[in-house]
Image (tube, rainbow, N blue to C red):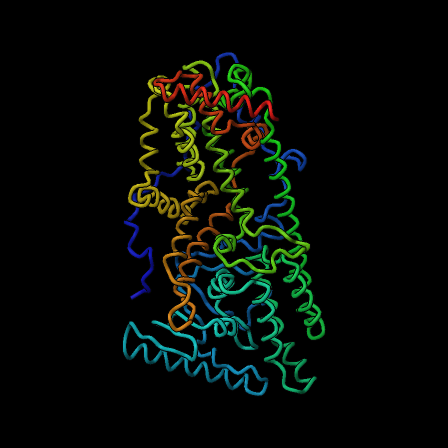
Length: 594
């Protein structure tokens, strides 16, 4: 019987998910008769220049980083093997799904770190593992065994002391930890100790266990284990590169490079190449963060056109820029995938990890540890407010109704693509109270499609309808015949909520002081799915003008939205009249101050 988790038995079987592979371009009802729509082949398909757009910087899916993608890992079929000695130790590591969490050599926690007993201990642990397997065959399922400070159930690691888990991560000449274990422990170990401390201890153990007292023998033994150590560090730098924004991590990596250089030239070159890829990745991240910050600053500027509804009528709206819902949905998907790709998997865990008391030190890579995750959540909020702004801005009721219908169609195209985050942001914007109260406008809108979309994202029963659709999108992605069918962009706030409640609902430590590794498997399971989703390269052509509009055009604040709504359709009762009066006074006072 598999370990019980908060998600066991939650999802029902999935209904077929509508594929968008043969999607026909819809005839847009929003096209103006006076402004011809440019031919699709003339839509700009090139990348932005760096000065214009944040999405032209090196992407983590291309070039040197493509080797770290998870495309070759089927996280749902769970095929995991320990590293064979004949494998290339510098092959690109793949973050494995942890559901099949068999770990090789359970008895390895007993291995002595002294050089003289290392080989015999490894052999002993393998004999113990064979004994455990024989007992499992003899007594059937449900066998619980302990090896020192590591506890297994049905040959799956369920709990252990922190020291034993760290020791289990350390490679030897004839042992390399299962990659699903490497990913799971590197991801969640930050709940118990900072990454730089873990790296220091692992490297120290790896070096110390090769010492025998004979300098020549020590050099020979370290030369044999060096490829495995380099492989472990490569997995770490490729899967969790943002850990190395801490200068202590970079210093430890540099020290190990010097140590490896004294023993094995081949491993030393591999370390150099790994470090170069890491620095390039961190440089790309820095450029991305600077570009997003510049765009956010530009979007915060409050032009005169937004200070009054009458003046805002002269401002271009989304329909003047793009009247094809499918094209706009494609550009939204570009933004989603671009921003998603820069979120580090550790950011999900870092949100509730203990604060490092030394993290305020001045370092070369000093950055907030969840900044990219927070930026992505901010994008969701911006899109919601952008939708509400576009609806509340027009003076004429007929124009407002056209924009509502347009965004309904955009939301439907997002659903067909598999872009659930933009879909939910659009629905959220259309359900904001300044938009929902426009009854005269909504009376001119056919809401049938909108009600279907709302039903798909209905929060009742813990978003059961959405979860079913998400599972369908995953199934389509697994059997995809095109890049478009691979796209799965989850409703991100719900993903964060699931991980948060999984962390809060399960104890990290058991009464005996052991770490609850079943919880760590479940956290890794959720995050490993995210790694698969984020590595998809968007197949659609980019449209420079639309992308620039979506990320930089100014939007109304909540107070400005309410005031614009009252000016579109007047107050219906005394409470709304008082609210409008108060908003006018407040906004006028704010403008005079600025």
